[in-house]
Amino acid sequence: MTSSNASKVIVFDVETTGADVERDQIIEIAVKQGIDPQGPLRTLRIKPTISISPEAQAVHGISLEDLKDCRPFSFYAGELHALFEEAEVLIGYNVNFDLSILQSEFRRVGSQPINEGAKLLIDPKRIWQKMEPRGLADAFRRFVGGELAGAHAAANDVQATAQVLLGMLEAFSLHDKSWKDLDALCDLERKSWVGPTAHLQLKRGRTVLGFGKYKWRALSDVAREDQGYLQWLLSSDVPEHVKTACRQELEKSRGQG
Image 1 (cartoon, rainbow, N blue to C red):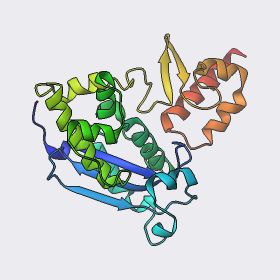
Image 2: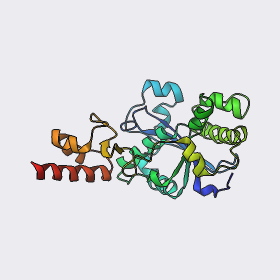
Image 3: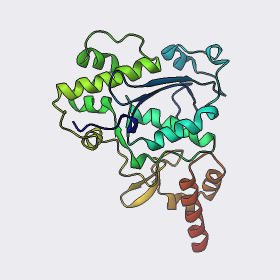
Image 4: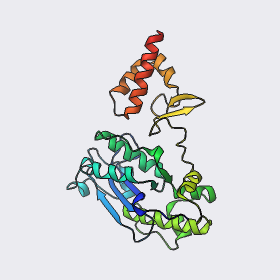
């Protein structure tokens, strides 16, 4: 496999207040540079502004009391944004969720989203699903050996994800594949995106909404049928490219009216 500058390759994992990527917040993030087991690894705990759902706490075991002396996401946002923007390859187990909630955090503090379209996204889960559907603990047992200790602690999951990927490259004879080849194998469906996030997508030649109550409806149809909804989006917490598209469709609709 083509070697890469470790600083350009990031393995990351987040623990959150819940599973809603628009509303919930990150309470722990671990970031590893490169997939070498000895590579630099940093873990941050973050104090959220909302409560932690019982379901999420049952998974990761982190309470608000544990986070009472931690700093908010805004304290780390600039550093994390620069780190992820500089990276060329982003690796995570079920990476779409982790990246989506990270993007939401950046928007809440007024930062532009990371340009995901310029990144290669590697998801060992998706690679494995192409071969043998399983979960992370099974992946660790299959490709590393032994039992995964401390699952759902971000640092442990990051180390496990990197080790699982290395094991997969060996097991599936993927050593000669580049990061670009693995990105294509993961097939994380970014090619249909209009802009840097999944909020707008191209379906059958039309720009559609990828979220909200009009998900998969053409933006031009929504502009004709419910201008109030697009006006609401203009004042909501969505990326700037979404607001620009909404303004353009509203202007077209008014011009045709």
